[in-house]
Amino acid sequence: MRTKIALITGGYTEEAAVSFKSSAFVHAKLDAERYEVYPISIMRDQWFYVNDAGVKFDINRHNFSLVIDGHQITFDLAFIVLHGSPGEDGRLQGYFDMIGLPYTSCDALTSALTMNKGYTKAVLAGIVDMHLADSVLLFSGDRHTAAQQVKERLSLPFFVKPNAGGSSIGMTKVKTLDELDSAIAKAYDAAHTGQQVLVEEFIEGREFSRGIFRNTDGDLVVLPATEVITTREFFDYEAKYIPGLTDEITPADITEEQNVLSARIIKDVYRKLNCRGMVRVDFFLQKETGRFYFIEINTTPGQTAQSFIPQQVRAFGMTETAFYTQIIDSALQAAKTNSGE
Image (cartoon, rainbow, N blue to C red; front, side, top):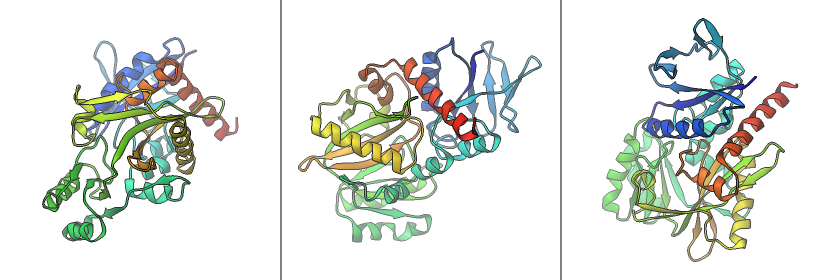
């Protein structure tokens, strides 16, 4: 009997469009002989499945089940490919924990924590050889004094971004103080980001992204790095999703020392945040010193053919089908262990 997989997509934010692309790619790559896959869209007004004939079926939220042609369908696992809220911020994870449905991503606490960039940096402080840019975390009540706080504590240039956003939505690189007020307002006003803003000093260097996952043997596997070289001011939303604006080099041209250093730090990040499944860590290698500067962690990374993780999986010598099988089997094994089976 095939394992029933609920492939979770959609979401409550602007990233929903990316989620649908990611889930379509994952669906195409999942082993059809092993898995019976049901794409489930989680939207604000409805949770539903659409069959091949275009018929929509609502999810029963009491137990996350479907009734199709009089038969109830329950799932063995939720494969979460929903970027942003509620699939990346711990809300769905908490719900699945309550109803007892295993899932592929980090748990509710880690997911909620890592959506908060400022809190994540606070937890990660102290990792050997990992550096953090000087920053100011602004809360909703700081809006009227935000610019002054930044001027007093940071030096130009700096990045201004929503503290709980994704896909670089609402983010600005500020090079002059005249740009600061509008950048802060843009970050505060970004939808569904919690009315918190993180301002960080700019680190000049090469930008990289690197995936990591725990395989079915329980080992942490760090994938080859991707270097991001963009014609834009920084790796913003347009650079991420408009073809031709960015070169993504996988595997990146780094030294063996840089490869070993970044892999070791990324494993430390994964452990310290108590991650599960696949995550992606973005970082700079500072231009003059070669120091590793943490940018952020993504616990539900994009999964289109052009996304970093699939690129890195292919460079690692693994097919996406084999990779997703590892992610699913690892999650099912963990669920059995936690239940005492």
